[in-house]
Image 1 (cartoon, one colour):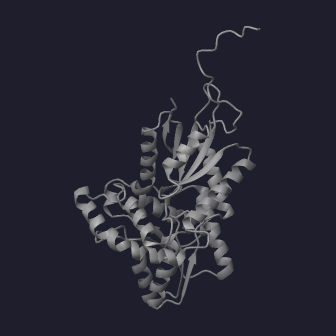
Image 2 (cartoon, rainbow, N blue to C red):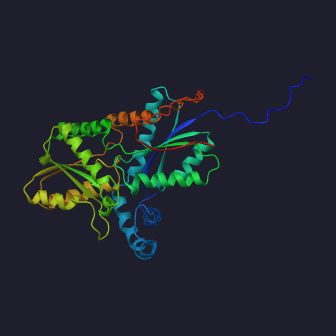
Image 3 (cartoon, helix red, strand yellow):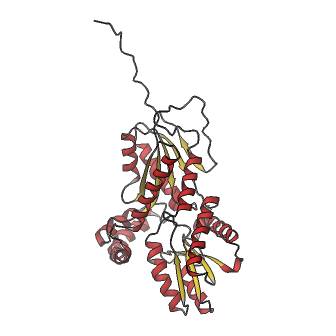
Length: 366
């Protein structure tokens, strides 16, 4: 019998396997009060979302808000729920599939997954599944064009919590905002130009971004400024005058002052001032959801028409528009630079770990 000698004292290192994880905010599992109660309990308990002392906020959340709001919110979700499910879940899954196909067409061998900060599939469960599939490098791409602690930072928090309880932490790259990315601005412009070719251009373009408490700006969030930078770049790309474009902020909650001007009062004021038609776009949302389909396309429409306006045109989110998918693919490719993107290609010593400067953090595997 041939003596094969002693076994090596170590196990061979696992070849690098790379994944891209898209992260969106989240959605309830069903348009029911029970599902909304679970979803809102997770969402509104996040310290990044509600920055009120816990001793004051939690009794209010569990004693009042979670007893009354789920039923109202469920009725709103029921109005926009599709046969396939929540619009946000459907569009995010389609973006994942489209990005997977686009990266494969460019020669990359990657795993592309998606997760929700709140609800399912969760970030932790998705990262667990990727680890079980042998992934050793993960690019996390939050689908938030503008940075806010309540969105981008909260997603990073959840990744960090997962890493804190994980024995073998993969290398992590955490994507930052893309509010001024040329591809993203071009995709917004293309969407509007397509809309205008079909329906003509309205007198005003209202760009409605999700609102935040006004104090978030004083605390250091660049969100307000990045929203206005997106609006300026888009306006210049379209060749519009400043008075033709109005950035606003929606989804105000509670009695505190939020970022202004507010969307619904602006729509009413435009109608009262004699503006007959508006185009309304929501550039801060990568996919259509409750805030766009119900709050803007339904409630915003009612506010404008009720105030005397005649023509309200909602412009859908980028969803799976080809120019946006091209931009998303380019964003992913830039941030994957220096990592092996083929399952049979080990990384070379000293290989550059470059990016386009939008990576917020790096983690090295053990």
